Amino acid sequence: MAILVSSDADYKHAIEVVKFETGKSVELHQVEGSKAYDLITAASVYKPITTEIINACLRPQPRR
Image (cartoon, rainbow, N blue to C red; front, side):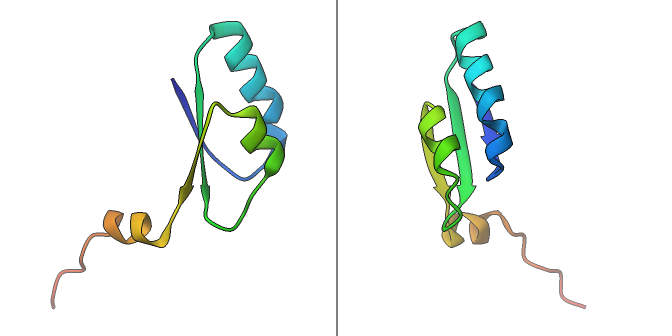
């Protein structure tokens, strides 16, 4: 599987090439609300990046 994190529709051709030439699926992640429909339709799987996911990835800042 290939994973792409982008909203840039210029990657549509790259998704298609990866799927066709390797037979692998392409998972697309985009920030929720920015929807590049060309990418979504080209990808095998679409998963929005939500605020909850971003917050879960942030590390707490050390106290000074």
